Amino acid sequence: MTSDVSASSAASATPSSPEYRERLVPGPGLFIALLLIVPAVALVFTPINAPFAIPMGVIVFVIACVTMLLLAPTVRVSGNTLIAGHASIPVNQLGDIELLGSEALRAAIGPGLDARSFLMVRGWIHRGLRIVNIDPADPAPYWIITTRHPKKLADAIVAARG
Image (cartoon, rainbow, N blue to C red; front, top):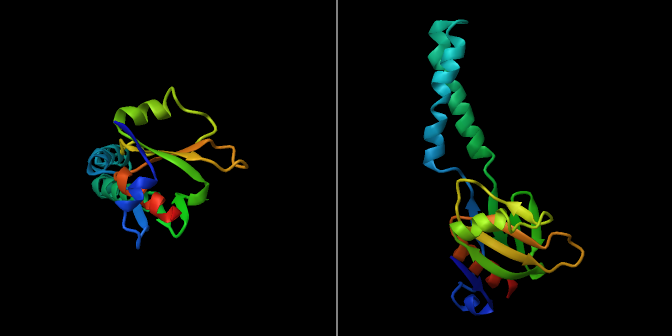
């Protein structure tokens, strides 16, 4: 699924609030998979101190979950700036926006990737945006950002342009 968002979609966005914020936290499946840490840590700690093996596994699991939540990057449009993790760019330096479904995203970050492009990709999110970078001083030709709400993010960028 690939489609273009143009200035005409600015009418569908709320002009009074181009703000957008999304934290790219992992889905529940990853946290369920992290449960495998408990028996792995318990297996390691059993010869050392058997009564503390299971509690230590649970503690390591909780630390891993909290770390995943705290390190999850944020994608937001604030004022006239797109912020993806620690990177930011004024929205007036952005060109065409392309919505990427799962297959288009896979192609965009696989064989179709320009090595100079900026990526904010999380493996647990399977859709996103490709945004052309029109800043002549910036070597990145485009930004690829995964998001659970690509249309809302595109509308917020278009609305922030004015």
